[in-house]
Length: 242
Image 1 (cartoon, helix red, strand yellow):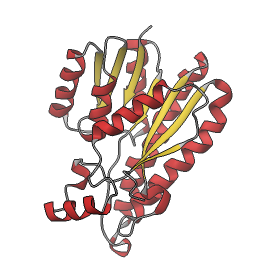
Image 2: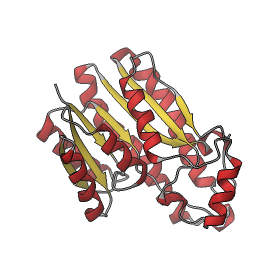
Image 3: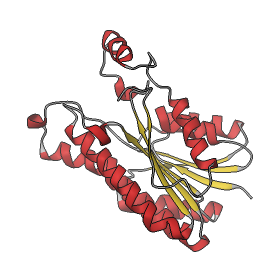
Image 4: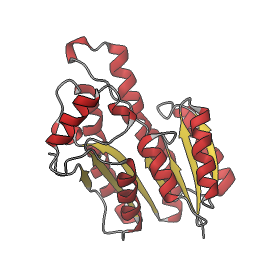
C-alpha cells in the first residue's frame, strides 16, 4: 500500500531534497511552499518522474486555515497521512535589541506555529489508524543557542521540546516523532554569508565542509525506515561541529 507523505517548505533546500529522496512508486507526496509556485512545480515534476503521485499546495503553514485546507485536500485525494515532515522555516540574523515585535511574531508563526498546525491535523488521522511518523526539521541552535539568532534559536528550541513531549504522548498509539537538528547546511538560508565567510565556517567544522540537503534527506529516510522504538529523539546532523 502506498504511503502518503506531506512535506512543508519543499520548493528548495532541505524540503526539496527530502521530497525528491522519498519519491518513488510506493509513495504519494504532498509538497508545500508559501509563494514560489514555479519552483514548487519544478520539484513536482522531478517527483513525478520518480514515480510518485504528487500534489502541490500553496499556503502559509503558520496559518491554521491554510493548513486545514491542505490536509483536507490530502485526505480527499489520498485518504490518509502516513508521514509528516515539518520543514517550513525562516531565519532572522541580527541583534536582539534591533528586533521588532512584528519580526518576532513572524518567525514564531513560521517556525513553530506551523509545526503545531500541521501536527494537529496529521495526528488526528494517524490516531485513527494507530500508526504514523513525524519528523521536525530543527537546528543545533535550538540545543545550544546562537548569538544574533535569538528568535531563531528560541523557535528551534521550542520544536525540540515539542518533539520530545509529543513523542511520549503518541508512542502508545504507535506514532513516532523525531527531529533532525541540522548544523550548517549548504542552502539559501546561509545566503547572507559571503564566500569567504562560508569557507571560514567550513573550516570550523571537523568534517571540513557544510552539510548537504541530500544528507539531511538520507537521514530522514533512515529515520522513517526505523522501527517504532526510535522516537522522541533530537538527532544532530552537524559534521561534529558542536
